[in-house]
Image (cartoon, rainbow, N blue to C red; front, side, top):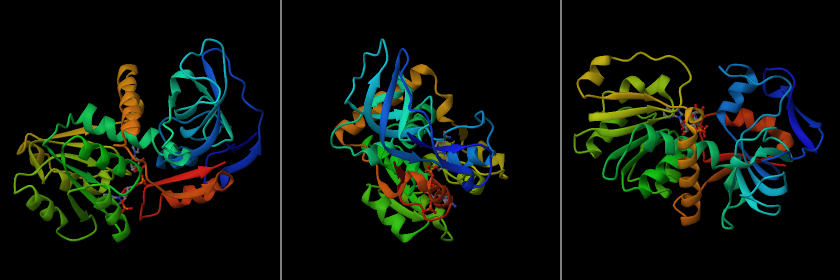
Length: 320
Ligand SMILES: NC(=O)c1ccc[n+]([C@@H]2O[C@H](COP(=O)([O-])OP(=O)(O)OC[C@H]3O[C@@H](n4cnc5c(N)ncnc54)[C@H](OP(=O)(O)O)[C@@H]3O)[C@@H](O)[C@H]2O)c1
């Protein structure tokens, strides 16, 4: 089969399209023929070598994909050959025509969800779920602001918060992105580059402040976030690309909390809850992954450049 291989950390061009041996399933393992691969910003950090946990070279990047089970190893009970699935991780890497997975990394993909949509589920929807429910413990009736709502995680967070009965504010950097946020059901949409936009957010809350902020770019926004929280408000830091200065008094004055979050920190039990919620949400239709752009898998270099540019619009996926 063909796969993207990385032999050295560096710019997007270190990703090479190569022939590799087909994977064979061992006990409790599954081989999936991949229909689409989800691209996440973290894969660009890992590829460049600028990430705390780096894989051993050479490797095939990627965690998120959807496809069809091709073969199962001994002892596999949850899936069989021919089943449509999405993957929350792999053993062999997702940027490939096939992936070797643990049985626990493979989840049923409803008929109405395409492979491209399914590839947009794992990391973004897990992050949104963990941020809203496991870290912020957001509840129906609260006001949630998704600060950076136009990309993979942001769209997922808007859909989940809306479906759970929260009042939702979403921010986007382009007109096209803001229209998308409105289409996803946000009650109020703001431009995170416009002067005074956070005053509009406060006005939307009737002056009370925001209960939960899902923050996708904390190095730019964390200091400002603390000034618009309601009493007892929480900021969940999902994304950050550098340091930031805050005034701790802004948190003190509001009994506010800053909560860090990594999907990969979820315990086994928390991961099981996340995956059950994702499967249920896909089946019920409350979760509707939005694919903005598709690239051929062999052109992963272009996708890695695109995902770091401004103007997000749903998910970027690769098609083998
Ligand atoms: N902690 C975790 O476990 C975890 C999991 C998944 C992702 N993440 C991180 O979360 C971040 C977003 O991931 P993603 O997959 O959603 O990426 P993405 O699809 O590329 O979206 C990036 C988002 O950031 C927004 N943004 C840009 N400038 C902003 C600003 N000044 N203020 C607020 N938002 C701004 C973009 O909005 P516009 O383009 O419309 O301006 C867009 O909505 C990344 O840093 C990623 O590494 C963390």
